[in-house]
Length: 122
Image 1 (cartoon, rainbow, N blue to C red):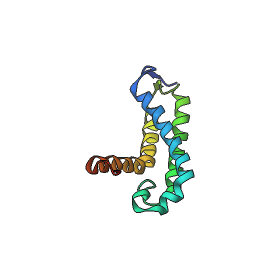
Image 2 (image 1 turned 90 degrees about the horizontal axis):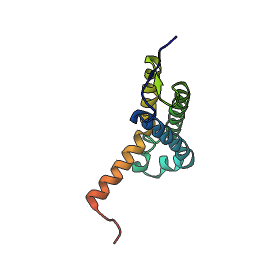
Image 3 (image 1 turned 30 degrees about the vertical axis):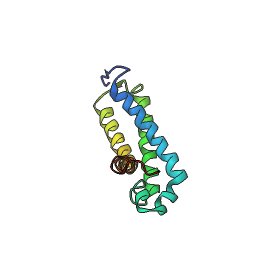
């Protein structure tokens, strides 16, 4: 029998896990819809798919979402955990962040170019 410790229902890490799950689901839908176009459009847009591998991004985002969804059930909505569940949650987060790394890089480049170049339209 394992002892579960409570971390509170409004903990920041629990909210972050739910947001990460939503981002994973968004990445799966986005890669399914626009993945081939992002792969072939340009080098900049292929950054979103980690260099033209939209299927790998879609599969890893699916795995991350599935792991986090299962862990949400096991940890009662990320409120309670033990050592093994914490390790599994950390692994799921790493998988999810790897899947979202290209999209994060693309958004950061877009924001940086907006800061550096300003408005592109007259």
